[in-house]
Picture 1 (tube, rainbow, N blue to C red):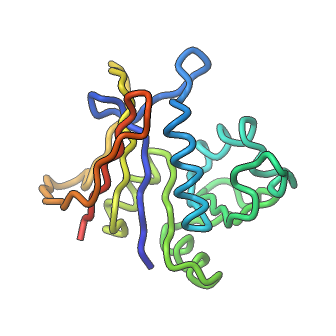
Picture 2 (cartoon, one colour; picture 1 turned 135 degrees about the vertical axis):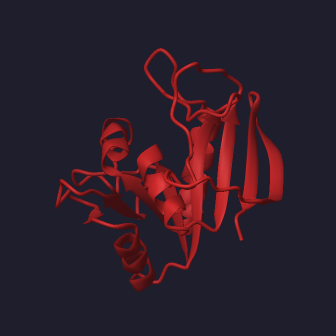
Picture 3 (cartoon, helix red, strand yellow; picture 1 turned 180 degrees about the horizontal axis):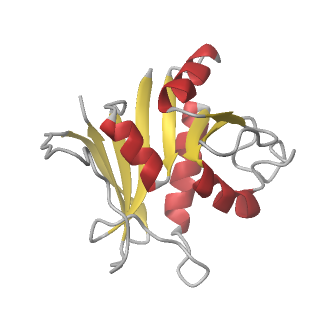
Length: 177
């Protein structure tokens, strides 16, 4: 199964931290929805999913709403503490998430957030590609991707694509193979 990590980053390399005062760029949100529809799924961490629930109505039985960009997708939440969320599959490990999606017939899995989830998949070398939507902002506070938190790791990647998404947002796509 091909696993793609998707993240919105700032121009200075941090995870973009959205808030009501600094909402995510619409172009990045539209791109994420397009990537999720293309994969037919996404894997998300519990805290990130909780933040998504209010704005997109992805759970609580509203997954099929006409205005929901994630209607009909297989959503997998990775959590050690929560065992059940209505409308989504909850698993405890990256391997369980990938096995569930593969059993459902998916050939691609999209990792959507947050930093802990991304770093867990990266540390276990379960990511084949990364898509970074770079927002034209600098943020002094933010989280970073860590390939291996215990050892220094240097990894060459191959640029697959680079394209503007609008409003200064640029997408970079890399292969980690």
